[in-house]
Length: 361
Image 1 (cartoon, rainbow, N blue to C red):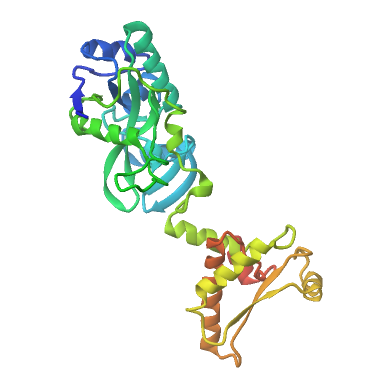
Image 2 (tube, rainbow, N blue to C red):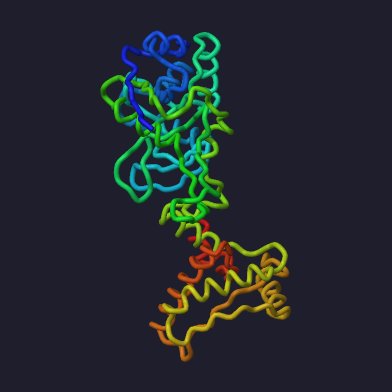
């Protein structure tokens, strides 16, 4: 395989309502069937009118940007100072929801396309119907990567080719059957296009030639195939956010049916996880005693009837530092329980107590 990466020069300034198919075909009359067109999402957003007016500077601009970010955010993944890593309504996890203030007037912000896959399909169809070009189209944008410095372009939308090349079931030269290998080829092609597009050169479109045959395969669902399902996401929150979620789970009472064997197994795994760091003499015990529950219900209205309790017994005899260690042990256990997907049912502070007021905050 021999690949060429070619810049599409002369695109110029794109504004709302511009016909991207005409703009690109005019600037690149040399396009061929089988080319992969890598289009920066920003010009797609501009053509689709995904611009928001904001003040040019000052605290009003920051407040307006925060409001725009909130509207583009499905959930916050991590926050550090002014940086917000969020999941967009598309499902992408990005800094600031992909909102961009570069290469645009200072009084505007550019948002991501509403549906990048649909944008890619529309551009591909226009080029095929009006210019008789059978291309693949990738809508790209810049992202960071967890655990690695630096940025790279990735695919937000794709049409005309699968997002993933699945090697599972293939056999390598040593006779090993591949079990897990799925290559995000559209991300690789988006990154290849970025090598010649740059950020300051006003080259928003690149062509990768030589990767696809003249007859392109179906896009097989677009770039949505790249979004990891929440159930498979082992790192769905930042460290501080996961820690806070664990404490929140730990303060939540179980108000459903009793624990299943899987629940109890998860609790035991959590206990095992902290067994090496607990204070000597601390014992964690699973309790399911009807009289204990009845006593708690009588003593504290609102304790859910039928809730199973996870109680910790402090070292005996109890001395001040032992209580401090015991509190730290409970804290570790709460986080370990949350990591196993189990909210602990530790007794909450009595209503009206200082601790209860603190939790209410």
